[in-house]
Length: 258
Length: 127
Ligand code: SF4
Ligand code: SF4
Image (tube, rainbow over all chains, first blue to last red; front, top):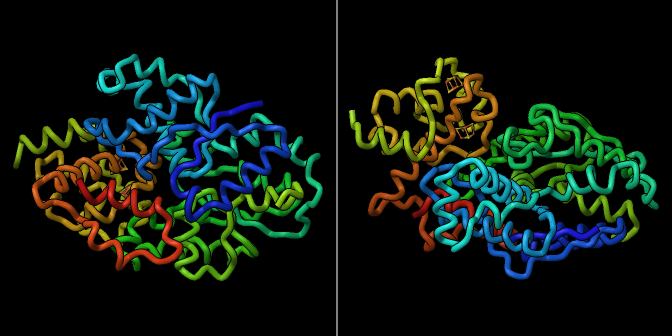
């Protein structure tokens, strides 16, 4: 099965391992990730303002390219996923956005961008299936206690993201079980790390991130996994006592392709 | 009361402030509550009252993390984060209204700073 793939800027620089392990694992699972030839940065965060159109166009272009290839679009970074999915929702539901994006693009943007955008984790759950992953595991991570850190971007706004139950998600815990490890459920798993405020107010970000890693470590986790480079950065900056790594690293390890 | 500004905020946010029942749940769940002078439920009420200038001049507009917790958990579907965003944009779009400049970046970055952090911060703090 082939998907168009949108890596995003950070997966080409500081989060190469998130990308590399994902590609190798996909191959081992019989999935072809075909990187879009002409993708542009999503901008990192979605702008909810109705009159911000230009900032959303890189996402529209990515969707249009995938549609042209005849594929659904797979994302991996939580932020890219959030931005592209929210943009798609706005384009689909707001006629003014569609009118203005169409004028920029010189075509009917809503139609030209009409393809599905799915996160890598959704691909694992809905296309490959966690049962199938379990069968393909050659190196089960038995005995490892893993805390899934969802943060904000994969889950919210729930009505738009449609990723999982935003207040009681289980997709990453199911993933952890599929690779043979034990998920640790802890209260702060879907709360914010502080995000971009790090740039202006490092102390505020640290408070948020500390609350997250203390919660995970306090519930007995020996490692935290995430899909977001900024979450990982903030948690590590806040001196997490346990390692914070990308979920794709554990997947590659379990599949024997690390 | 500034009706022009109020109209702009209502339009850019797409929020119907009259739906708010002032339960305070948005503020209760806001991770930046302790950092803010005005809290999410106050943003909604102050926009209803047309007190936009006070909000635009408050550091609170830069404390929102766009975490969408208030959007998810508001029992009335008001989506307060969209109000905060609209007020912040109105402030940063003013001449000299940028809250972050490129010159500040060298002092902020380290070897691990993800590009994602910088593009996000510029998107939220600079026009
Ligand atoms: S949670 Fe919703 S209804 Fe309650 S105060 Fe906030 S905006 Fe108003
Ligand atoms: S989106 Fe902003 S205002 Fe709403 S809960 Fe998060 S930080 Fe608070």
